[in-house]
Length: 98
Image (cartoon, rainbow, N blue to C red; front, side, top):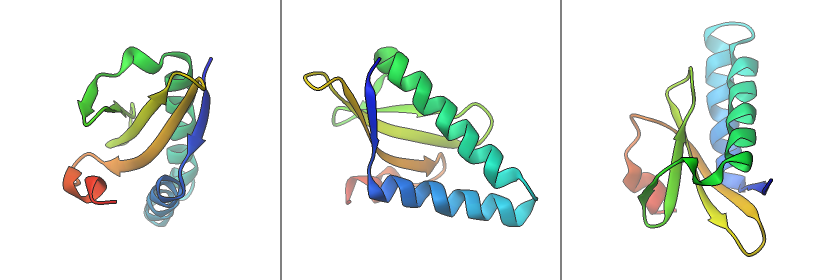
């Protein structure tokens, strides 16, 4: 199994989305973060299950919430680097300009 690193901007993506969902319905933000955690665990176990979407970055869509986890694989260090967790309707150019 690979290790995982969630970069600070990706952590901010998760916090913002969880807060937004919590404001919509009590407990929904916790469900969102739990689903992100489950997807990260899946990626750690199956890093190549997701296709390369652009510039060597792979994406995995959450099961319930319309968000994608953007990540790269560092095979040498057996590490998954999560660079963004963005809503599927967001423009990818926003992420690329980070």
